[in-house]
Image (cartoon, rainbow, N blue to C red; front, side, top):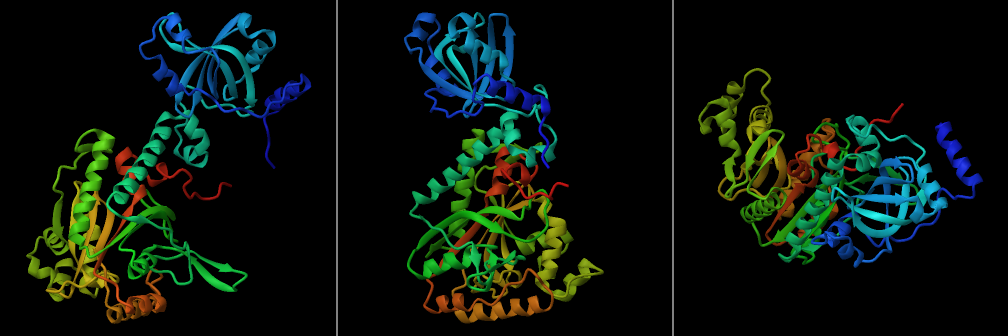
Length: 486
């Protein structure tokens, strides 16, 4: 049972007894805090400000209040920032001034008036009428410290947003970043599409899915782990450049870089190669860094990262060899590689590479690095390299020690893809919950002929973490997945 603050409830009762509706209908504001600042540029005298008019409607949350007998100041937060209001009893009248005196911090208010400057030059709204539009019946956090507890900030994001300016800034930047990505692709001829988020067969990534049941069809469905196989169906259908920015769901662990529900950009281009997508990604990331930081470098969690072009490109096998301190030839020889790894070395070449990379290489890739030459064994949807069939035509982009993007030349051979699906099914039967299912409809689509294609997935949340200097993925998702509160 929810318990309300009895003192705040008493205030509600008093308002209603006095004929005041604490939750009335509102009206659209005609002025924001940012617009007020813009309008006042170059207007320092009362006469010049008066020329703007005296009937602006301004609305927001009262965050500060100072009463001084027959007048008072308040600071009100709206979607664009803060604006000071100045309330005088002889201007607003007894009834409105009584309403002002009854206001608590956190109340949503509507004020009408014109712009003025105080003796110290601060821009303010000289209020001519005032009313309460939504009563706050919870006490706000300490005005000097805001909300510092990460748990509270993530569970009560609404509170975080109006108390902590950095939270608002982070999510405003996130919106700008996504808009920039969308525009970047659209001007290059990509078509934005939407694909199903419930799949009869989960696919497109090696990940454990969430499972549900559709009652009307009496069938099992899975929340998508990736849109890849549907987007490539569109390539088969003749949509040569497509992208989607939407949610994926993976029933896996939660940590600083993983949330079960996350946002991905995936895009595919016919008649392109992974090298072209690497160039495109480099251009996009560089543009975003310049827009956010004003230059080609930024600081992430105290570390300076350079985004000067071109970004480094290094082979997976080269990096594994460097980490082990052995020649590259050793990492292509299973027996020699297992001996170099030592006790507990995996049984296959690809698994050995992956073990060393995860444990010794990934965290060292601070500056933007395109890692290439992936083993085909851990690339079930990528095209084989013509010269080296055990190597995939693939890259992953790492920044600040974590994967940001994954791309490859797509496998277009339906027979080869069928065999790889079968290998994934065997792995699943052997207990690998992240292995893929066999998708016969996708094989059918490939059988009609998919043109040479390259595709990429880019993690929006991790990119936003980087560009906003946020330590956890939960700081850049408005409502992250959290354990149920007891």
